[in-house]
Length: 265
Image (cartoon, rainbow, N blue to C red; front, top):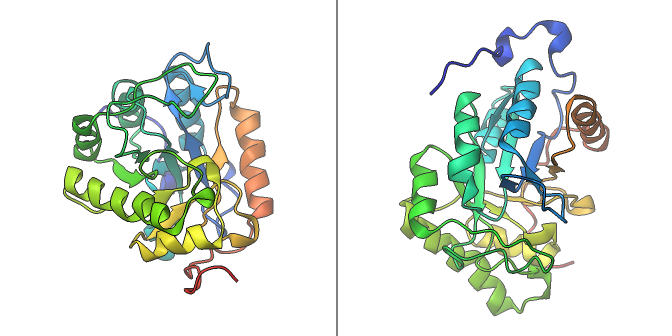
């Protein structure tokens, strides 16, 4: 791992430290890390921009970590961390994102699709087509010290599935990743950010420890964690504004209790 010249959380000058500490942890959402020129959905950042964004976080006394580590640290009262997540399991994570994360002393959670190993992002009708991690690639992500989480099997809107199909997407994807990496995943990420009480309860029942959404609204809980989308356009001022907005929306301490059992109310 390369030497990290940026300040550690405990060493950051007071005026550069992040003002929001006692609240819902901040979790950032990334997808593909490569040339963002062809990107109709705004989900691609270049390796250089990722490095600038991580440098900005470190300058404020924040270190990026996976969500499981973030939640453990927050529960223990340890601050100075931000969650980094990479959705869809693009193959470019290994070649482009991982070296940048290592350079800045960060880890992350990579949410993958064990039902599409070595496939493409066929759910994006506008393209461009991007390769996904193979089975070996998923294992390499875990061996690199990154947290591997489930994004379901096939990247479907879980709210539209039958109960049986939902069990496949949650239970079977968890079992498949356990077989691949040797460790059952702790985290689940809802495709498209879509969820309802039935879906969140299915994730809890499948044995996951948390679930990542985007804007969960009244479903906010450990199984519906809010996240902030990060794009190529996000630099200092925009990142500061997104951090501030997250703090205003989620100023209270995190809701640690799981979604109540029993399905929809």
